[in-house]
Image (cartoon, rainbow, N blue to C red; front, side, top):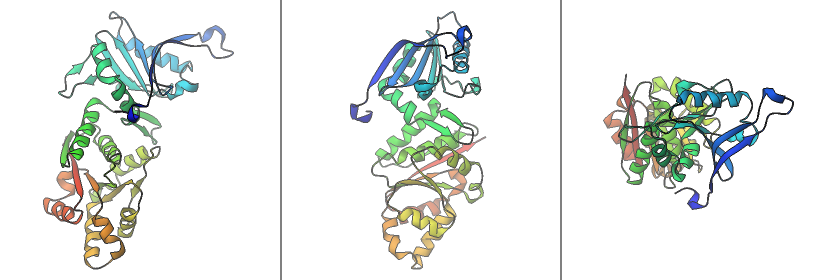
Length: 318
């Protein structure tokens, strides 16, 4: 399921991190409980505690180790920390020593929203080879603006997986999110991960004109700064045609107004060299605030133009 089965997955126990040179007894040796290595790289760190110990103590211990410089060198590659007792488990992203925040400590839940607290059940569901790979690769985002690593919450991961299943079945769909639940981040990862589907040539992320210069686009650009996929804002119709006609796979951020303007200009005989190629594109539309960004008639017109398109809308309420 991952890398055609050619990747390696190793479990290391009691790895010793020696004190930094010149720190003497102020900075003692430390032992890491369990480290998970993927292809030889330490990417997931587990701190285990007895049932009688508060989970917060494990978080505080990791924060202390970070301040001591234990997560440097090859251990700076760590993406995810897991703190675990037999009856409680949580996970959070690696951060700079002074940026660890308990507000971003997440508990795992099943698809039916039932909490997963038992350590062994968490291990089976989250740290199995397939899911562990995906969490540290497909379900992480670097926020350039905040200079931080973000791990997705379970419902965001399930959303992405649901969209991927829909696209494999050639079906449209929509996602309902409440305000403040990370809709922009989820929709970014959906748009980004759709490009992993070989049959998809472009992903078009559609925002309402009034939102183009606001949080959604700025967040997208911040997330994409360290990504392998370029996010293109289209300044005018000519740019939109140029981006769509290009041979590279990319996410294009644009408005419904620019798309309909482009279609109108095609009808007027403009951009004929590119029109047929663009009409035949296998494209996925991801629509933010779909309840107001596109009307049913407009969507019908665009689907008639992009006859190989699939649509995934995001909507929500306070």
